[in-house]
Structures are given as structure tokens and as C-alpha cells.
Image 1 (tube, rainbow, N blue to C red):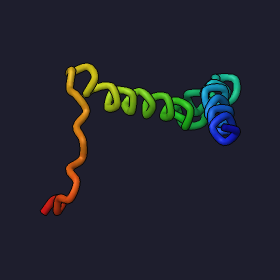
Image 2: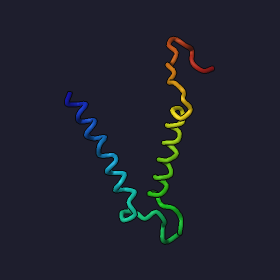
Image 3: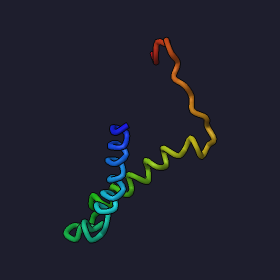
Length: 75
């Protein structure tokens, strides 16, 4: 299926774009004018937090649950 290969091709550009965007040569991790963090260092921190949240169920050994069909939802 050509659509699936196009999707995979587009997804493969993400790691390269992240490596380019977070390299110190492109964008320094500390703003020289203020001494505060820049977007590149904040991006790295955010990705680590997302990885922790995504991996927590696996680390705890929880099995995925199925959504209930025909339910009313949360009240």
C-alpha cells in the first residue's frame, strides 16, 4: 500500500528533525542574554517526561484495558 509507505517515510523524518533542532550548534541550550533555558533544552525535558508517562504502564506491568462499549461514560 503506497499510503502506508508514505506515512512511514514521513515518520522517519522526525528523528532527524529532532536531532537537528536540539543540537547545540543550531540552537544553544542556554540563552546567552538571559542565562535561562531555550526551546531546545525545554524540548528535551518535555520529551523525557512524555517518555516516562508513556512507559509507566509497561514498567508497572499493567495490561492494556479495552474501552467499554455501550456505556454511558463518566458521570
